[in-house]
Image (cartoon, rainbow, N blue to C red; front, side, top):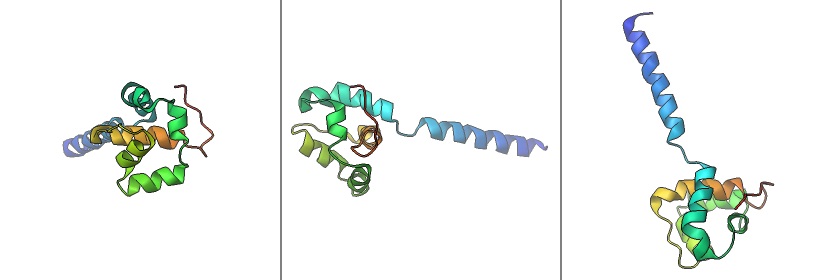
Length: 104
């Protein structure tokens, strides 16, 4: 391999590693829910996530209404934009039709 090819392969590998760590995470969303939303909501993350099915959560997120829906479910809660993807992943992972139950 030439030196240029080696550099290109290394760059692609580096980008692949960085892109996976930058993605949203359901476990991080669970921690954020417990820390930022649980006391204001007054119920567990399981109850929050099961308010909708996975398809409904997808439609809400796709329409850009996730923060508004979270505020409707938990009056007085304002989800910051930087937390939306992680909390969405949590809600999607533990939605009513997922069969998963969170431990919070």
